[in-house]
Picture (tube, rainbow, N blue to C red):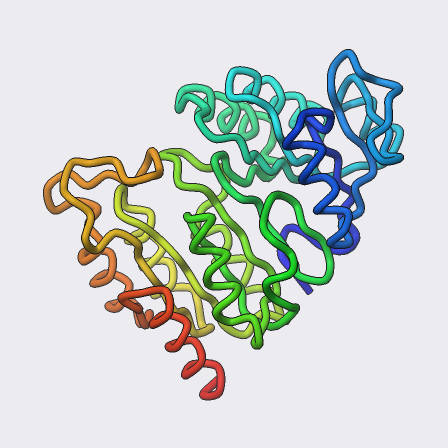
Length: 291
């Protein structure tokens, strides 16, 4: 089993005719993803490697039964693209775009809530998600791991890849890159809840980073609701105060949002926390046999 994305998912690509959209569509198809349509306004009727292109998400979904969108759309058009996916009642919108104004993210997140929360948003500014061997929606390399029984949720794209590679022999049920912007559609807690309910996930790796309080809130949720073992890593132990580090949400002010504070909260909830990604992977290797 997997969370959010399965072998039954039917994927459309918003922005399929752009350079990045075309390149990563080919990678997704090579990984076994059922990419059934593309959307680029004004280019309906064209094809990309045999995949039909439509002018709108609604037309693509009606013609192909697509239920998932992967958004390769520039920041200025991203809000409209996500709202279009919500209006088409797709179950999942994976927003890869970096640099979307926070106001726009807040707007399409609120729009999804007002529409009944039927569309789950992953991202923005994220690598997407992969259920190895089943489907890949985004830019995560599909050949660095295999199917297994670890669930992974991460703010960082590159650390997602590293953890997948470090634990490639054990494998993963689903890996979700939720993004590092101040507002994201799907949170650590959303993924923890889904992994806890997934009978084919035995243990969870949670990767966080400095800034905000998402990891502290996740620690409270783990303490109260998660029975499966969780291993954590928090990026940014050496980050200087007051400087944005890579992600728009990764900024420390005073003692708030530091890696040390997040580590303390997670460990208080029973999470084993590594000081490096490799140490976190080693802790997971110790955890699974005990499980």
